[in-house]
Image 1 (cartoon, one colour):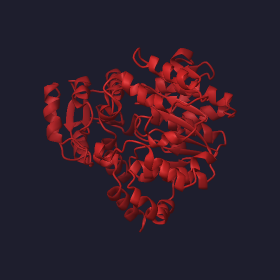
Image 2: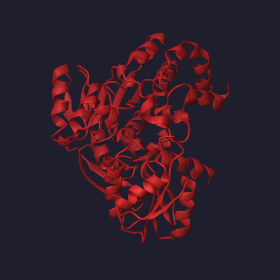
Image 3: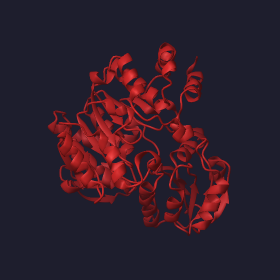
Image 4: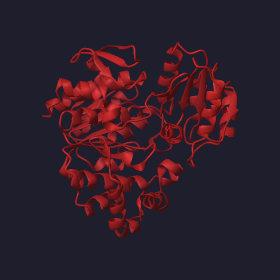
Length: 432
């Protein structure tokens, strides 16, 4: 099989949550342990940092990877979902896993894993760990896929655990209260391994404290350290942070959510240096300022067009959308706001729609995944929230309509789902 044939095999032969949702979810770690045993426990051959949380874990994971590789460490990065190409999930020093490795891995080991019938994520995690072992990385940033306690990345014994925040998402698996969700995320906390909690609420903080005390893990709350003192936007619209350790720290990633992420990262950097990593000021500055170039991160308040301004963001739950809405309200320079939105059918759709500004012009659409909510159903739900607009069968058609309607000083936002952003980047950016 060639690369595209291999991807087709993976997508069709193993259940993929990204495409079909809950029916791809497999509770328990039996398959993970079986794969890990077969490959000789590859994750034990390199250091790891484990990152969980409802929102912000992608930005934190990529920024940490950028800092570590700037410091000279051969750095693996395992994240999900991908936006344009499967290989985005597995990187070393920003470079995606070669197509040949993916093809060879499937061809060489399918006789073993086919009888197991692993999920797509279980198999991809095994592939990532095997690749990092073969390439002899010094350290790998491992992003949790879903939850924490039963996530197949949770077999690692990391140097540091990070839990960014807790919001409502994947409630059908993780629970219907913030405390229940926090309990699942807290499942990555392990004895003797320091854990940094980025944000808490009165419901979640006791959950983390109790779990850390139970297993004997040092716990640190980033919001109590106050390492981020101030933040402002420069003339290019990028953050400039004043911090306890670094004056005028330039951040490439936009969006209000990056203030919380940065505060969490500053605590993580301190802890990693205490653990023996050598992350100097120049490394930190380069990692923050060049994270997208160093790691290939996309879709975080990413500007893809001007006149009119076109911004996309992968925020897709009430926690993530709250930051986006605040940012849109505070963005004072546009004449009219246009919002291209699509969602998947297992999210709190009504909750998200209720948060969106009612004075925008809407373009309701759907992503090219089976989980996508049909655009006509989305429009009906949006109408109940007072949101007015038209529907379009594809993201590209919605974007073309928005561009035709918009004037040069208008603002077009594209989001509601990672998959909407993925379709945008495939159909728009990569054809420019």
